Image (cartoon, rainbow, N blue to C red; front, side, top):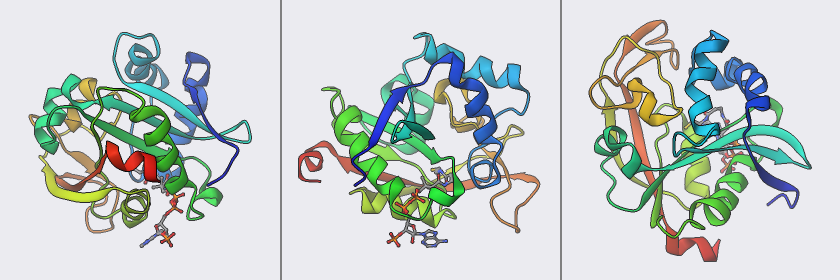
Length: 212
Ligand SMILES: CC(C)(COP(=O)(O)OP(=O)(O)OC[C@H]1O[C@@H](n2cnc3c(N)ncnc32)[C@H](O)[C@@H]1OP(=O)(O)O)[C@@H](O)C(=O)NCCC(=O)NCCS
């Protein structure tokens, strides 16, 4: 695990960088946010300003920002909770590594291990943590599994006209059961059209935290 890995709270100053990262092909494939900067900022500012309970962080390596990670309690986002079927005390986590050349080298696994131990389970309310990678995203599924998560079930995000937005979950209608769905760009089969997408709920219990 890289010793110089750390997490720094996202601030409004970081939003242009985050917006640029989300437009990179390897990130955009799995995580879409509004291309319009004002619209994008409107989605992220409430959490930064404490008006939304999602906690957002830059992933830093040797003090250099290299990615983004966020966590939230599912109970604060009932629509997503209902979709993923979690239970009380369960936290969610979403992440990406922004530099393509840093992917596939164990960094995502290390980030998930460190972040769940130091941030997610440091919150006494969190008894378990879930991720929900797309079934067609083996790198993400593998990174979660290597970090101690186990497959807990598969769920389908229903069709909608809105693209996938992961952040913040409550204000992201595409992640909720009523209107979930995404404009699939993740596979040649579905590229360019709106469809249902299948995600794996992947879960890690708090008690594993100390042993990893
Ligand atoms: C998903 C992500 C965070 C994982 O981080 P990472 O640093 O690349 O992950 P790791 O290197 O720790 O682990 C990836 C594992 O997947 C494997 N993998 C990568 N591509 C794969 C593929 N196409 N098929 C099968 N396994 C694959 C790697 O070999 C590695 O496993 P191994 O160490 O057993 O060989 C990162 O790749 C990323 O940000 N991707 C773009 C955005 C994204 O997908 N975010 C997740 C949304 S849920």
